[in-house]
Each structure stands twice: as C-alpha cells, then as structure tokens.
Image 1: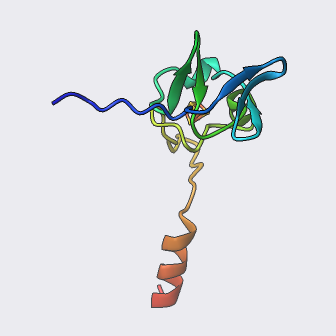
Image 2: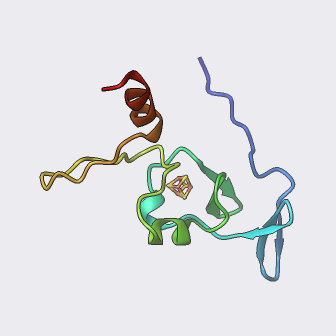
Length: 94
Ligand code: SF4
C-alpha cells in the first residue's frame, strides 16, 4: 500500500528572513535530526514539523519529539522516572 504524502508545510513562504510558516520564521533541521520522521521538505531543504528551531532544540539535550532516537539509562544509574507512574505508586502506598 502506498504511503500518503502530506505536505505539512502547506502555506509556508520563503521571505528575506527565512521560511515563514504560520507567522513564525522556521529554520532548517539540524544534523542530529537525520532519520527523524518529522522532517518536511520545502524547496531544497528540510524543516521540522514540530519545532521552529531544531538546532536550539538539540542544544538543550535530546529532542523529545525525535522519532529516531530514545533516551537510554546509562551504567552510572542515571534514570529518568515517569512522574505519572511515580504518583500511581505513591497512591497505592508502595
Ligand atoms: S522532532 Fe526533533 S529530531 Fe525530529 S526533526 Fe524536529 S527537531 Fe529534529
């Protein structure tokens, strides 16, 4: 079955400041975005359908909307806890 192609950047227009989409100037995807399904093409470049500035998103850590990477617990014990699960455990008295 053929995959339906949706143009998520419909209505975007190139301006002197960059690509304008829904009143915001958006910048092309970062190198770390390679492989993410949220990329959308416009003319000769790819842009993110979720963030206006992918480079800034990656500057503060792993992009939480990335479809091609996930957070991993390392051997030093760095673990992130889902706040919803923690609150359910507390409610059960564990
Ligand atoms: S969701 Fe994140 S990783 Fe994916 S294209 Fe956008 S900024 Fe890049």
